[in-house]
Length: 223
Image (tube, rainbow, N blue to C red):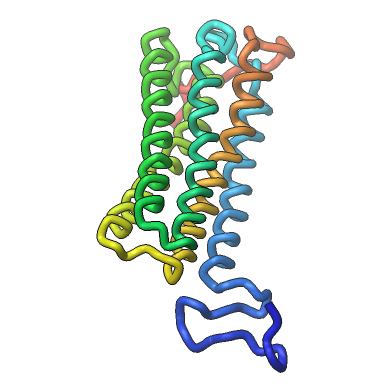
């Protein structure tokens, strides 16, 4: 949208624009997501560097359940569609639609977390813990942080749902829903990368690939 003399509206704090043309709150969210990309990038890179280097089991091929995780992945991706619909309903001032689609997003996100809790517990029963081997350490760290991000998103969406039930969401608050949506889509995209690398590619790893790397014990490091 063009403005006279190159000026951007600054009369309302909720509609203050930066020199980029983006709302300052949206720009802040993009900045945060960019830093989070670096954070997850470091975790993913660490996993890939040590992939297949565990000298003791269980190994990914022993416990990774790709069909089960495929279902949870599909559910999480569907939640992104629900989030888009929630924003569209907000712009239309469709109060019933706002509540319905926010609730659907929350339920699907909670289902994903339920799958993750089940998976973590199943791995523990199979003997894989965060200090068992390199696979356990890198896997639980990466997927655990992602699960924490999803949980934070669920809290955020629940607050929006409460606002919606009180009639406090509408076109004037669409930016609130849009920013939450940006965060939610981000965690979905990150999971696609994690699912591809950890499950579809790394899920068939069975022991060291190099055979030369000696894994230090995680429990006997010098103090």
